[in-house]
Amino acid sequence: MDNHIIKPMPMVTNSERYSIKDEDIKIFTGNSNMELARDIAAHLEIPLSHAIVDRFENGEIKVKIEESVRGYEVFVIQSMCCPVSDNIMELLIMCDALERASATSVNVVVPYFGYAKQEKKTAGREPISAKLIANIMTVAGASRVVTMDLHAAAIQGFFDIPVDNLYALPLFVHYYYNKGLRGKDIVVVSPDAGGVARARHFAERLGTTMAVIFKRRPEPDQNEIIEMVGDVKGKKAIIIDDMISTGGTLVKGAEKLIEKGATEIYACATHPILAADAIKIINDSPITEVAITDTIPIPEAALRGKFVKISVASTFGEAIRRNFFNLSVSTLFDQKYK
Ligand code: R5P
Image (cartoon, rainbow, N blue to C red; front, side, top):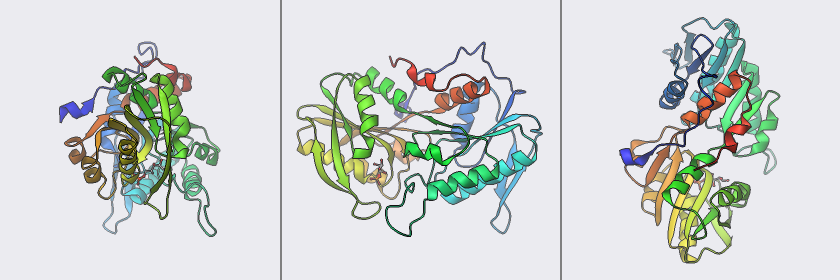
């Protein structure tokens, strides 16, 4: 399985000058993605702080912050992955506890921001759940949000506190560049109209062209391909997406690309939701390999199949460091990818 874990591009901010001491900040985590939280803390070379995040007998969430946070800048790491509602409630209750314990600031690190697909009304009498989540995070005491590849960038505007929306794209560029998948024999593919800007940046950095698949969703979690635009014949294709949920978008996209003459299909996506039979249908598909990140814990079964993991721990670690030292976060993404 080790060859399924890819060493990410190095991301270090002049660490001697900007080294964080554990008396400077405190980093806590809920239960959603403890491995990533530990890796972020390890990147910063500080220990995770202690909190009990458990359940009462009646099923309610029990939180107890086990060390003083008075006057500290605190970071709380929690992904909004399955069980989504429980993980969100853990986060909210932790924010409440930290704010009441007089933390100077409660910086919420959400590697995967859930409910993001419900960011607008597409029909009458629907909610805007992403806005509701933003509201309750702020009410709970969050003073900043650090997240990655929001499904819709406009969600940043649902908050009246700062939001840093980080990108996994440089990690993918670094990976494919070093794998030799770059230049004119490659085509980058957006699997839907919403991903065109991301695919264009990706194609530019790999020095190649792009294609776009247009799809429609007759029902939630189902999709139909309407058309594909771009030249893929005789090329290796890399599909780039923000998330893999049921896997339908990727697999149908891959089949379309093969039908149009692509010779081999690779795919990458930031958030591996991997719902329902996603792992199986991807392993059974014509896709050669799928690169995913650990914004959501990756099931071992995925890493025994076609999936490879690229960790976002150093990206989040550097974003935390830069927030603490009031350095620019966006310049993290100006680095060269070789
Ligand atoms: C859609 O807008 C997203 O960018 C992804 O393409 C989609 O969520 C993937 O879902 P699934 O894997 O269920 O097709």
